[in-house]
Length: 460
Image (cartoon, rainbow, N blue to C red; front, top):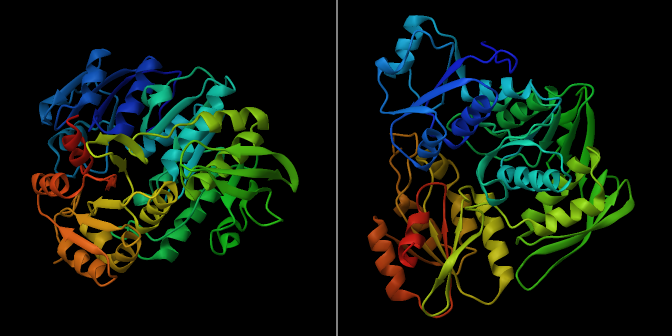
C-alpha cells in the first residue's frame, strides 16, 4: 500500500474530492504543503470551498484529468473499477489509496490519533470530543462526518499532535486505520449489503480493537452484548463505560429537563467525578457524552472543563437539528437517523420534549437495509404519532430487491399507527402543509435528501 509522509509533500489527486471526508483529507494535505487536485461528478459547496482555497477541481471525471506527474491517487468506495480516471492512473502506474487508507496514513503522522467507532453515534461523539479538546486548548486536527459549527464545517486543521476522526465499519474501512485511542460505542446489525450477519460485524469490531497499540487504550460500552469477546486478547488498556458498578466510567441518576436534555452524575472507578448536563436531547446522547468524557479524561482533561464543554455542545447539523417554525407553531426538526436503533433514539427523545404530536417524515436509505431490517423499521417508526414515507433512497444500489416504501407502510399500518406513503417530495410537502398547522413537531428523517422537504416548507 502507498504511504503518506507529511515530511515529504507531493502531488496527490482525489477522485471524488467533493465527498465530506475526501474534501477534509484534501484540506489536511494542502495545509501540510502537498499539491492537491481532484475531480467530482458534480459541483457542490465543498468543491467550491476547495477551489476558493486554490485546489484545482475538475467537474466531471475523465482520463485527461490524470497527469503522469501525480504521485498518489486517492479514490472513494463510490468509484467503480471502470472509472476513466482510475483506469488511466493504473495505466500510468500511479500508486493508489482508498479514502480509508489515506485516513489511516494520516493518523500515522500524529502522536495521538483518536478513532471513534460504533454502529451509531460516531459523528456526535467525535464532535463532543472535539468540543472538549478545543475547550482544553489542545489544538486538534479533526475529521468529522457532519458539519460542526464550532469548527466551521467538517474539518479542522490544528498544529498539535492530536488527531480526532470517525472510524466507519462499512467495507471494513476502519481496519486501514492506525489509531492510538479507540472508542466502540455500540455494535449492531447494519450494512448487511457488505457484512454477512451480526457475528461478521462483531468480528470486524474485534479486529478494530486489535489495531490499538500496547501504549494506547480502548473505550468500550459494557452495554454491548458479550463485549468481552470483542476485547479479549487486545494489547491496549480496556476502559469500560456503562451503568454497572464495576465499569471504569459510570453514569447514574440520569434525569431529563423539559426539552428532553439529559444530565447525570459521572463516576470514575466508583468515585464521583462531577455532573454532566447536556444541551442536546435524548438518552443516546448521554451515552455518547459518557464515552467522550471517558476518552478525554484519560487523555488528561479535567472533569470540570469536560462538563463545561459538553454543556455548551449544541449538536451537529442533521442531528436533531431545529430547522424552523411554520405558521401554527409547527416545529420542523431534521435528523440523520437511518437505522432502526437511531430512529428509536430520536423519536424517544422527541416524545420526552413536550406534548407536541410527533410526525415522522422518513426516507428509507438503501434497499438492502430496508429489506433486511423491515420489521425493526416498522417497530421503531411506530413510536411516532404519525408517519409519512418517501421513496427509498438507493444511494449506491441499483437493485430494488423487489421492495418499496409501500411494503414498509403496510408493516407500520399493522402496528396501528397512521401512515401515508407518497412518491415525490412535492406531494409530501403539499400533504404536510394542508394537514398540519396546530403545534405539531415534523421530523424529516433519513440519510438521503429528505432534509429538502422541511427546508422547502420553511422557504430556506
